[in-house]
Image (cartoon, rainbow, N blue to C red):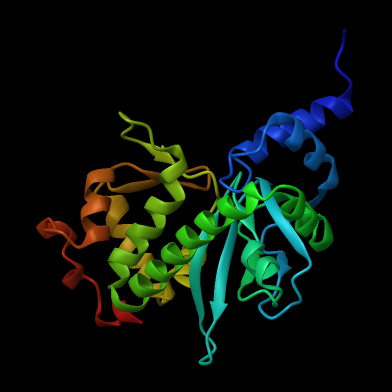
Length: 255
């Protein structure tokens, strides 16, 4: 018998929810009851999902695309906290604590998001206590990750920050023997500069040098990571090869 489109849709949503730690402990029957409660919304690149300080009214699962989470500082600068992709969730911490969104969410690419209203989300938790345990574990992990991102982007040189960002964005595409990773999301040099808090001119010089030395390349608007070992060394500031010494970058690399 041919499966109805609605059933197919529920099935794809269940598969997506299973990928996230929040719902991993729930059985298929429970997930099939939760999945239809989400509604889908499409976002264009650079559309805002919400702003820092907005009332928390939805729990979000990313179906396709990427979303960046940024914190606005008192000095007017944006601090990148996370880059989230398919299967990741947004807004859970604010909903659980009943407070406004603590950071801004902005589509880094064309994105398709599944949203669950605050009341529905709290109802799911009330009916499925296992979700609370999973949520606490996931939230703790996310907070540690965000803290590390803030520390890294506040204290390390631009070269390390850009390398870390590219590795984060490419992490979903890594395989055990992979040597070439194409980033799913299209990024301009301006995007990268903004995300790591660097001057555009510095970022342009850095990426141009990496392209010349075979560390990265571009393919139809996508950044390609060619030399993962070197990017990992740069990211961790371990024994830079001479040609990648950050002192080669101008003095504005810590802006």
